[in-house]
Image 1 (spheres, rainbow, N blue to C red):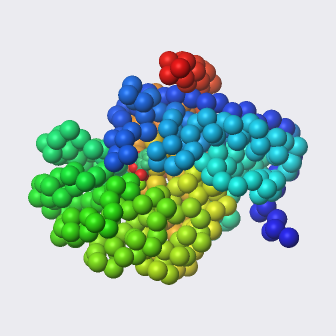
Image 2 (cartoon, rainbow, N blue to C red):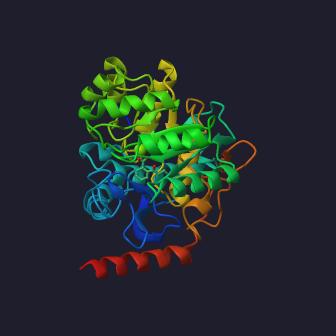
Length: 385
Ligand code: OSB
Ligand code: MG
C-alpha cells in the first residue's frame, strides 16, 4: 500500500486551468548551457490555477523553459502532461494521491502541487509556509543572494557585482564555464576579498578539468555548484575528494534518496533544493527534513520565477532547515512589472526578503497582466513556426 497523500482538501478539486506565459526578463541570465530565455529575453513558464468546490483558488508555477537545457522538461511537455494526465486524474479528488500513478515530469508535478497546497492554505485561512512547517516555528525573513550570469568581460562582471552589493545583496553567485572561471573569479576575489562568493557551473566540466577546478580552492568560495554531469553522483565524489571547497549539487538531486547517496559516497556537502526539480513540495519537505537531521547545509534555488513561484520558494525558505542564503532575489531583478500585485524587495540591511504573511501564497495574480503574458506566449510560439 502506498502511504496516503499527506494533505486533504475539505472540498473536492473542481477546476484546474493552465496558463502558458512568456514574460520579458529585466536581465537575461547566461549560464554554461545558454539562457533560459529566448534571444528577446522572454522567459516562458506555465501557471497552474486550481479551484476547490469551496471557491478557494491556489496557484503554482511550472519552471520548465522553452528548451530542454537545464532539464528535459519544456513548457510544451508540461502542458501535455498536465492537460492529458495529471489534471484529469485529480479532478473531483480531495488529494493528489492519483499522481503517484505517473512517473517523471517533476516540474509539471510541482506546479500542480503548489496550486493544490496554496488552495488548501486559502481554505484553512493560513499562509502556505504554516502548512509546510506544520506548526513548527519558521523565519519571517529569509537570507538571499543574487545569481550573476556570464558577462561579456571581467570589467562588466565587476560592475554588476558592485551594483548588486550596493543594492544590499551579501552573497554573490557567479555562473562559470570552461575558460570563464579561474581568471574572472580571481579578479572578483581581488576586488572583494571578503564577500560571500560562490560559482555555479551547471554541469560544464568533467574530471579532466580537475586541475582547473583545484585552482578555485584558493579563492575561499562558499561552494562550487554542480561542476559535473547533470545526472552524476559518482564522479562528483571523485572530485569532492580532491577539493577543499564544498560541492553543492543542483541538477543531480532529484529526490531525497539522491541526497542520501550524495552523503554516503561524499559526492557533495551542500544541497540546492528546487521544488520543481524534485517533483513538488512533499519531496522538498523530505529533503528538508533529511538535511536538517543530518546537519547538511541547505538553500532554495531559483529558476527565474514570477512572483507566484517565488512566493512558494519564500515559504519553503522560511523553514528552519534552510540554513544558507537562497537564490531568491527582489522582483526588480526579474520582471517589471511582475504578474503579482505584490513586489518583493530586498531588505538591504541584512540581505533578506520578507516572507509573505497573507493566506495561501500571500500574493495576488494580476489577471490583466496574466492575459498579456499568455498572448505573448502564443505570439512567441507562432513566431517560432
Ligand atoms: O542553475 O541555479 C541554476 C536559473 C535558471 C536555470 C538554472 C539556474 C538558475 C539560476 C537562477 O541560477 C537563480 C534565480 O532565480 O535567481
Ligand atoms: Mg544551479
